[in-house]
Image 1: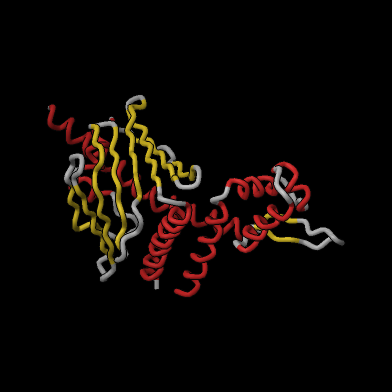
Image 2: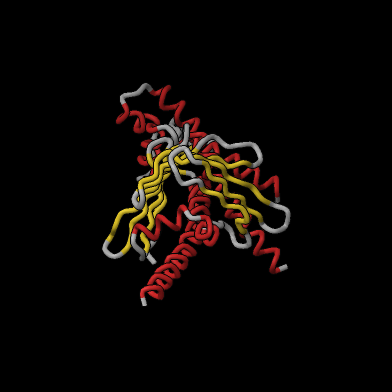
Length: 154
Length: 120
């Protein structure tokens, strides 16, 4: 449906917004319940999330594990700092590649927008170098998707 | 292919580090309007010419701007390749995130259907 926006703010932040045709309650559930998360938070084509554990309470831990089914994979671990059903989630997370990346502090807001929801996700990295590295890692995974598709064509 | 990827990542890293500074972002914004000399670039910043030259060097090393020789002047302009590389990765990152959220649209549509089914 509506277009996503992605922009950098200041020296250390990245802000993503997206509208959804469902109420905040549903979008919040889709961000916190493992069975729902595993259906969409997958990144490039061909990747799945076999492990998804969420302890949805302040101080609770979560763990997402991805695999490309060909021996490639990585995982993210994190902790919830604040959970305000169904409006706001604040958490920290790090990717293990396998060495952990510096903590990414993320605030996700879900605001009623007509019959739908406006989501605003604000990521704050420790410094501009880390932000650059994170964005470049994102690019690498995007490129990975192209390579996987290319492999299918050859 | 792997080496090529590492090289691109290294250059992008330099480009984003270069962009982390507000003065350098302002210089790029000025150059987006057209070529300018060091004096012209220094003017709005209340900075010494050596300080501006230092910022220009960082931008040049990151592949974001290039210089031209014109007599004793060295006017700078935006480097198309550097700017395009940054645009490209932003587009790729955007694409990966967008496909996630397109899937989430389907998940949400499924939840709505399920809810309506229960009510009946």
